[in-house]
Length: 59
Image (tube, rainbow, N blue to C red; front, top):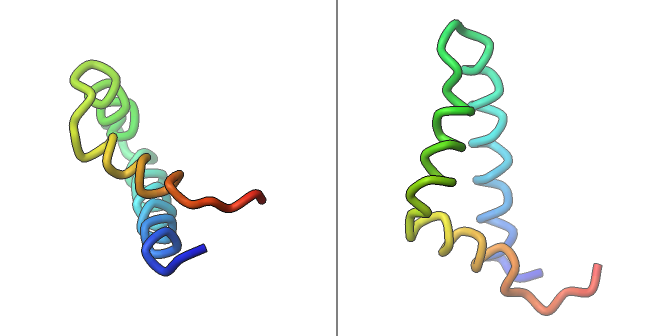
């Protein structure tokens, strides 16, 4: 796995952990962001997925 893929995965893990912590409050932040991604399919999300899964790893 190259450094770029690993760095992107680590950023995703920390972002998801932060969202899990923030979601404990009264406002459902994670669901709102998920709905935004499903409805508008932003370019940054496609680029993120492409970066994570562009490796040739077989694990």
